[in-house]
Length: 484
Picture 1 (cartoon, rainbow, N blue to C red):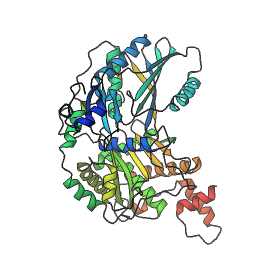
Picture 2 (picture 1 turned 120 degrees about the vertical axis):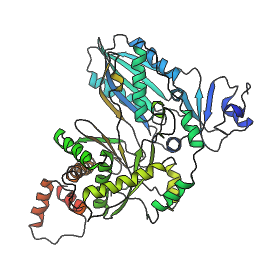
Picture 3 (picture 1 turned 90 degrees about the vertical axis):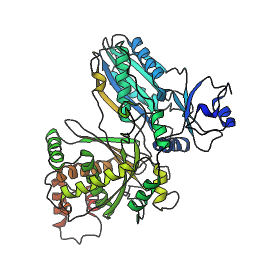
Picture 4 (picture 1 turned 45 degrees about the vertical axis):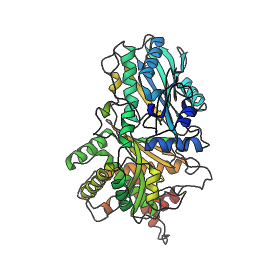
């Protein structure tokens, strides 16, 4: 095996015959190590789903200040050369669990186009669709590619396609920052390697975490779904997206509310989603998935490491309708802080501790609050990133992704095989109403927070004025029938 032995890859715990199978003569392989909990789930879905684009991200943005696209392509390659995670593929032949293989000499596919004088928006739509159809092969590094399209003498439209199994949102902006640094001809920052996190995980005791999750999920009867418009035989996935937002004034009120009560934006979002699930399901004990940043403070320089640290774990919420809103959210925030202490485990393992039957997913919706250094790639190099957008497909029927800013933007992902666009629009509207109303009065009882907008309340009032006997269905179901 070219002199490579199991001792060269201590985190992978391999025998010699497996080393021979995975690395061959060893000259092309820099390192081998296991997967993080989140990567394990993503690779499982990537290998088992017929949906080729599962967890493939397409980031589009305009980079202003680029006078030499060829030098920009070289800058991307320089960052790939310096960043192990960008040279990583996955191997599963002859091993019980897939492994990460960091390769030497990986060339980044960079395509250069000239859209000068063309309709850039139309060209981008066609390019994104064409690119998505290509997919990415988990066994082949790099799990990313870049298209650079000249749109003006100083502007380049970028399409950066990469697999989420490599990078979390924080690391995406680290890579963009490093590319801008490299384009400016400046030295790249020295970042600790991603393997430091894998080493930390290997030494992390799971006993306390198992005890915590067994107690936290005791008595859970199953997931909390939102009834769809139809059943689907296919594997659920959020592949269509609907963006909605709070106004600047509403976002300012949200900001003031969380500051006044010592809360986070994330817990308000989770509280609103819990109330929406309770309203639509008719249950006050609800469960959904949430993504946490997962960067352990014990690792030196952890915020500088490029890789994927996030993890998705269940959130169980008891909707206490008699509690004040601020007090209820504070309790949810405290529970989430405790859950994060035990958050470095695969979702599949946690689901097993919930005692649900095999094949039953504990979470049928996912809530994500993104809080990234969006302007990090702009600093000091004469380049500006604008019109940034990113889309992916997740393995949840519903995915809610909120991004902070002057206006809180909420991207509502849904499975079109299960939900009509009109249903998703209604769900998104109800979530925005809950976000507005939750932050209106911290002393208001949770049970008094309305789900419906004033216009919907008027419509239902008109319906009730007919004197008809109300059917025994939930308020959202009644409203849905009225507007169909």
